[in-house]
Length: 231
Image 1 (cartoon, helix red, strand yellow):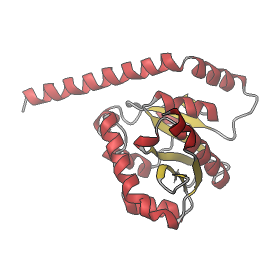
Image 2 (cartoon, rainbow, N blue to C red; image 1 turned 180 degrees about the vertical axis):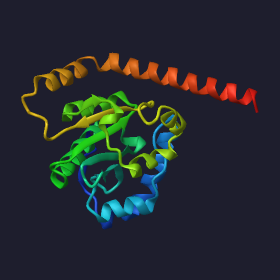
Image 3 (cartoon, rainbow, N blue to C red; image 1 turned 90 degrees about the vertical axis):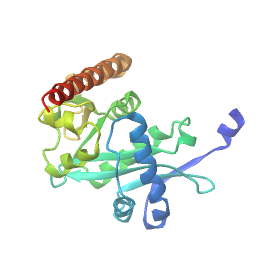
Image 4 (spheres, helix red, strand yellow; image 1 turned 30 degrees about the vertical axis):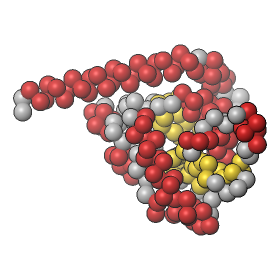
């Protein structure tokens, strides 16, 4: 097994129209992964992913023999004031190689190149992604710090936890919000301290996120039970 792992190499490049043949398998894997997690935005059509490739707003990871291994794309909101790196997905057979971190770094660099003045944000439930974001300079923020673009929030409708988000007036949900601000002062000691603390306490933060999920899901189920009594 070790020798097999050492023999696999990946190339991560900006996707283009020549990669359209992978969009169906990517879209299916995104949906399957979201279902397995029980959260997340599940549906992105192959046509939508093709558009991202044509616009040069996606990166794709391939093995040396051309096998699809991973993908991620860029979405811009609020007339380009905010950017999100969305749809990060790695093929199940390649999930033990640190590929997600490499893809995340490449899509981050592409975002900075295309939108140098934009704030880059993310919503995630995974501690691994939170850690990667932190390494790139993101810090945890409240939902109010994110874009107010209605088109972005409409995208949450396909998430299984959409009702929870709306019941909280879009101010909270199971996901954790993180933000990279290119215009923040590089010597801002408060931001640097927060980022360092987050890195050190990632395991504690992960436990807090899991507790948050438990409480919110329990409250939502209780609400549904109460409603059913009166129907």
